Length: 146
Image (cartoon, rainbow, N blue to C red; front, side, top):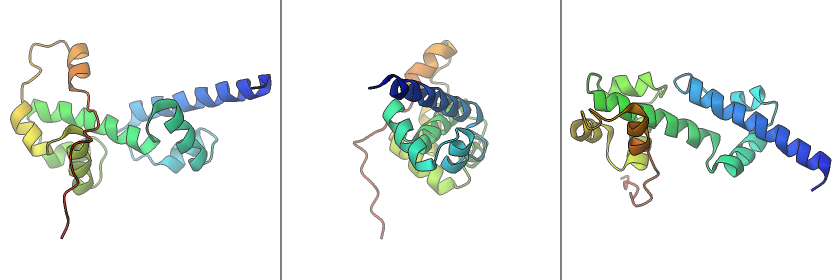
């Protein structure tokens, strides 16, 4: 790779980190790939390809993972309904939220809330975050629709 190619790749990585930081910071706000791409001075397609190459998932997938991660924390607290948690983390559709939550966590939000309330009591927050981080559950089979 030429020097100018390496320099361009480094500039792209800086912009991709800024996009990731924005998602981490503003996950509860309405965000879409087009808006993220505009902020990074990239096309939506280029951002999606480069983001996935750099971080292993699409910008939308990363955003939803952050939202589900935060939802898990709120559901463990137990003082909000699943619907309230859905909107608190920036999702506008309870159905999409529940489907994505179940895909990533392996159980529905209401089941998670019921079984995990207080599960991290007494664990330092830095450890609780690592232990409870959502990981794609590839063994979950899609629900058949009729």
